[in-house]
Image (cartoon, rainbow, N blue to C red):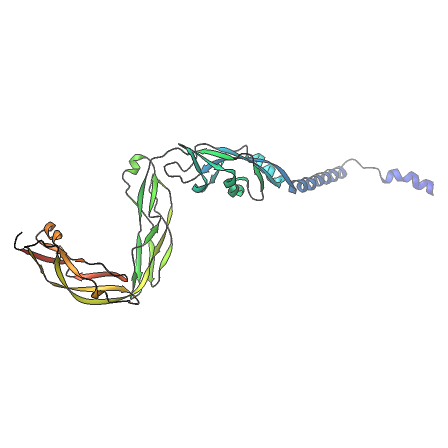
Length: 328
């Protein structure tokens, strides 16, 4: 019996080549290789990664895109997948990276540089997620930003604002920044004296408002900023009505300047709560120098210093008739 069993063993373990068995063998081999490859590519390795970069940066007087690309190389620790991806990307076109203008330093003329310390803030942008920086191979990387025609123009707020009863703005809308640098061809620049925001819609205000708003683009031009921050101080107010005398000032000796009418109605709009009555400290007058420059003796009254807390005032009438009597 033992002799028969021994003779039967080679037949039991003989590999059957052909048909279905060879297909199963090859599939198993490929599967094993795939598992091995995925496992190894998932491990962390330390190697040099190189990426060609075109810099984008808002620099006054210069193009916002560098005319050259610079290769940024660093020793990094990452997965085999990322290393393979980097080797493939390095052979393709340069990628665009936007840098903060504070990180880009002027070398001379059109040449700027960024240091390795500052490049550390852009590791994920340059090399991708999941990359740990060990060290950059160069201390600085240089880019050329060509000079470009430009000028500085103000930003004007376009707004639709309304207030709840007894509330108003303490001052016009404030924009930060209130001016931008525009870039472009000379024939485009010469006709632009300012730019405008998109409409700031602030209905039924009873408290201060702030936010950001886009600047309306101008065809053919580029701007140093595409949006601005706005703020509007809003306060509750009370109105104080009073009648004032309108006098003449700076009248030369020997000359009398009569003002008609000699009184006017003034309405003060004051922030609430009211600290003191402005009618006790504000006076209104016609300056003789304004009379000399007037047409037909019609002048607008000026006011002495307006105390803090007065938002605005109106005077009725707005224009006064002045008559000179006597001569120097």
